[in-house]
Amino acid sequence: MSQQALLEYFISNQWITIPAFIIFVIGVTLCWFGGLMAALTAIGNQRWAWGLVTIFLGPVTGIPYSLLYKEAEYPRSLMMRGLLVILVAAIIFGVGWLVS
Image (cartoon, rainbow, N blue to C red; front, side):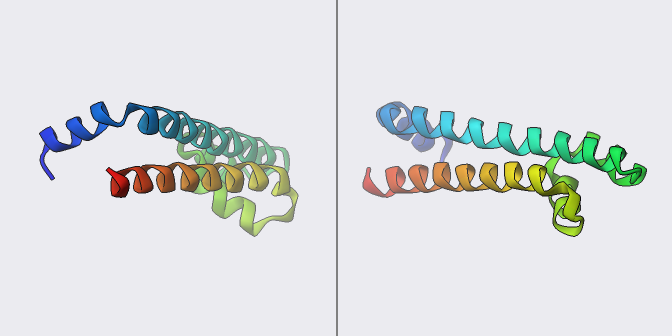
C-alpha cells in the first residue's frame, strides 16, 4: 500500500481513526504505567536486575516479570488491560479499513 493511499484513508475516515488512535494511546499508557509499577515492585522486592531493566524497557520486561512473580499482580492487571485496549483499537482500525 502506498503512502498516498494510507494518507487518503486517514483523511477520509477521521471519525474512525481519531477515536481509535485515542483508545490506542490509552492502552499504551496503561502498559507503560504498569511497566513502571512492575519496576517499583521488583525493586521493592529486591529483584534489582528485573527492576532496573524494567525501568528502561517498560512492559517489554514488565510483562514477563509480572507473569513470573505473584507479588506483581497489580502491574500485571494494568499491562493486560492495556494490551486489551490496544487490541480493541487495532480491531477498530481493521474494521474501519475493511468497511471503507
